Amino acid sequence: MIGATSPTRYGAVSVALIRSATVLNDVLMKDRVLATEWYRQPSKPVFGGSAMTAYERLVDDLRVSNQKSTELIEIGFSASNPKDAETLVEEVLWRYLEYVKGESNKQTTSLVKFLE
Image (cartoon, rainbow, N blue to C red):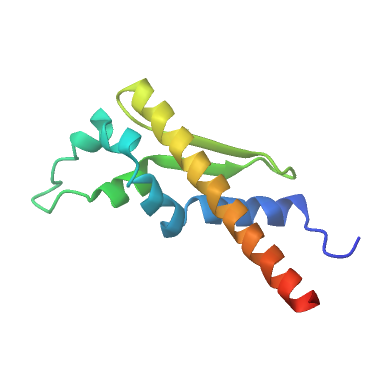
């Protein structure tokens, strides 16, 4: 099939997009995330250094993996409050889906203009 993508490649691209700054920065701008205990109580400085930024903490606490030889993506989050973890996973998923939908719409628009 022309243009087909293997499950392994699809999974790797999806994982990279989910973990991208474009998606994660959008997550950190959502009111639901800003209201979480996870966001409001930033990490303490380690070994005399500075505390991690919210973005750095998000990258560190987020787990995204592709189930081998499938198109299934697993998203997890480490937080002391399970409700916060649920909120963060939901927002990461929604921001990713919005990004993919937006990119698809851009490609469709470009194709229609090309064909006109």
